[in-house]
Length: 620
Image (cartoon, rainbow, N blue to C red):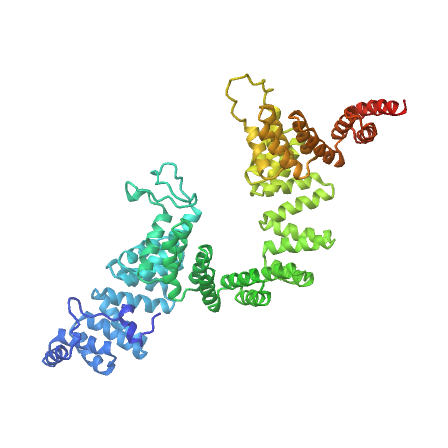
């Protein structure tokens, strides 16, 4: 309830009103004119002069005039007399005069009387009088009625919030926006039949295209409108929410403007959000200024941001101080971040302590991090329950880690269940594991689905395996006819290339082979060389074959040597043949023996025959 003794807020409470259609003179001459008329017995003048004195705080002077006007039936005077008596502490007598005025039709008095009853816990009487006020078009009456109904969970609250908001009540506009926002998150309409919106810069921007009429507006659209109205009237929390909506939509400049307005009015969350906006724009110094302001006002998120900023600069003591400040502000992320900081410094015992504090407070990623720490220390039994707790709370990484833990124990069935759970939440490596398992089971359709998810998420191994799966399905390629244009690349080639670009050595070799089959020697050599330089023995062997065919036998020998030294049997056989042709029989025999040892079987057989022939030649 508003404090009635505060003269600055008398008008805002609605308990002080001037008689209808009368202007506040505000000047000594006008006041004197009303005083003379009141002394002459003019009831209207008594009421106006009483209201002027009440506004000024001259309660003694106002009371006699208001009582005289009230005795003559002036309802505005009765209402203002109630205000005066309320200020003096005579609440029951004030209510009596408000009742007189309300019965006479004063909406302001009905509002004041309704609030009086609500303060005393008489909600039925409060609702009756507030409804009387609201139905007469009184803005504050509509808002107070909405507040009462909302407190009771009555669906009719929104109607009166809307009525007050439409008459310019900024808190009503804000609360209406919040109600619509909550509805938007729980009741998302089917947008299929909505008018098409103009293309947007970001996929997650709200649909705000031109509409034929208001009937197709969603709760989210309407919530934004009311946030905007309240924010324009200086409501700092409305400005914060409006900024968040605009930021999600990518309208960063306008979002920043509303965050700034809200932050200047003292909203710590807006100062924090503005800091992140500035950080993302590259202005780290300005971001730090706003984070500091928000953190000093008790915003834990801002304190964490400052901690991270100082940690990145290597200022670990300052970072730790801000993380502790975040914890003091009730932000459990502070403990988690302290754990990360300690883990990076090798302070395992301290990391364990902070992770546990955050994990016991329900921080799922802290529970996962604690489990990883325990697992690294050899305590798999201690790690498992924390992985489970984190996974059940929704940590995708923990679900994947549980899969790894069960797989290490040989429990493939349990591992697959957790991999599937993580994959369903978008975990790339988990999708790869599920895809690989389905391939082993022969379920190519499910394998392909998961491999596509993993490959789309950036897994080079998944892209390679997907390419291999698709490659096995395509019919054998016919030899290219001279003069005909090259056939377009198949989908499997595109996946091989994606994996190859990400550095996957087997994919690089495969792309080289496909290019060689098309007759593109330069492209083939490029990919073979990439694979060979990254350590692929097959890449080195194939590059050697390509160079030998092109007449660069000395360079080919270098790559075959690298491949043979890495255990490639065919490369060793090629070297044996090369040295035999050159007449370097001892070298040829040595590489032939190496090829016999390396295999595979058909290579070992050929190399054995060659070694025997070279031995006979050397002993002849």
